[in-house]
Image (cartoon, rainbow, N blue to C red):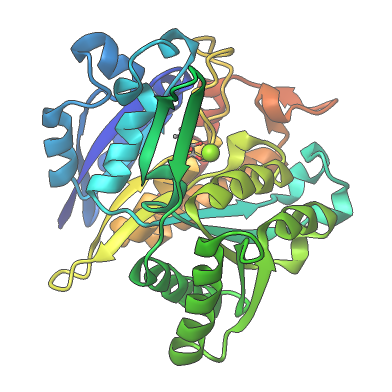
Length: 371
Ligand code: IPM
Ligand code: MG
């Protein structure tokens, strides 16, 4: 019998509502019994933590996160906290979790469920059956490079600076993972960077070519300029399988990929650290790619699918519970095929449901599949 320790960090806005559906699902999995069970604790992060403690995440919550086998994260941010000091803004809590636990590999699978091909802003034939994986480097680059500041010049003008920094080893480890992931899929890897403009881009290309040659020469590798990649994603997304890219490009390209699946509300993610040499386990955080959607928060309208699918990724990557993860993913496909839709993916003639109804419908399918 294995007990998995989870820390739930719902955060702000719709994060709170969609996390309730994960709790419901955990309850059902625990009730089912079997070899695996979950123990979980919750804490505040983001604006909610700021309101209560004047920081975006407390040391106590960081300690709980360090002790957990997996961190399940909702969403952070909102206009309410636009004026809080930069270092305490809601997003800082998430960035600290990523950085402190060295969660360098962010897996963002964009899968277009057949039932949702119509909901995408692209034509059905372009997205139907789409299954791509964006692998975003998550702990380096423009997000964390120093200096990062706004300074006032002598003439009174202000100057904002962000710095993009990468080292060989930071690039190498994510490229290796990209090769590993490509091998398990259709053996195709694209690396997106701007080596025609950026020095970090030159390094990304050089390290990618060398790593690929030494580590996985059988993988079909193509280096692609990040702007061209953005264009090709819209033109013909199915030409891609795994796209590996830096932190900033990955942020942008993954939002773009998300829309191909019908809605930003559909895209889950896993952020993984390096595997512990002793246990083989990696520190991990799971979160939907979408944000806190303050405009619809608290109304029970949010799509819980990306959150539930992120939990499925936790079962797969942190808990060795592939059968349960498969059951959850199949349950999502089933309720969509049955015509259930939250507002963000609603289509004429189908059944509009809220967060809780969608969550319960998925959980009912999971229960049926596992009983
Ligand atoms: C994401 C988000 C975050 C990011 C924000 C909330 C800091 O957009 O996970 O893609 O920019 O990385
Ligand atoms: Mg983003």
